Image (cartoon, rainbow, N blue to C red; front, top):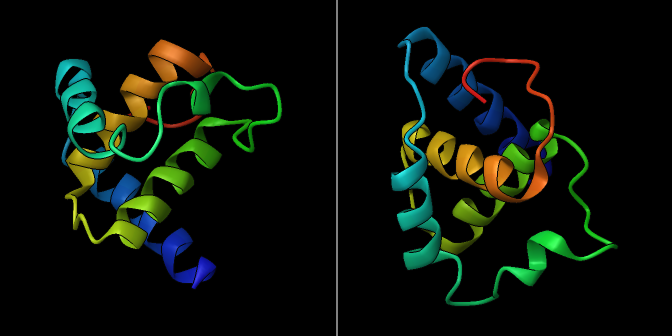
Length: 99
C-alpha cells in the first residue's frame, strides 16, 4: 500500500511539473480547511514529534491521507495543499518544482 501511494505521489509531482502548474496557496488553504481540519487541527503541523521532515515526506503524507480518506484529489489539489502547508508551517527547501 505504501508503495502505491509513493508511486502516485511521484506521478502527481511529475504531471504537475510537466504541465507547468504553479501551486495556488489560497486554494491549498481552502482544501485543507474544508477536508483535513475536520479530523485534526493545525497542532498536527507544529508538534515536536511530527513525522514530516522534508517536502517529499509532506507530499507523501498529503497523498497518503487523500488516498485513505477517499478524497480523490487531482495532482493540482495535492500540490496546492503541499505548497500551503510548507509555506505556512514547515518551511522546507524545495528540491523540485512545483513545491
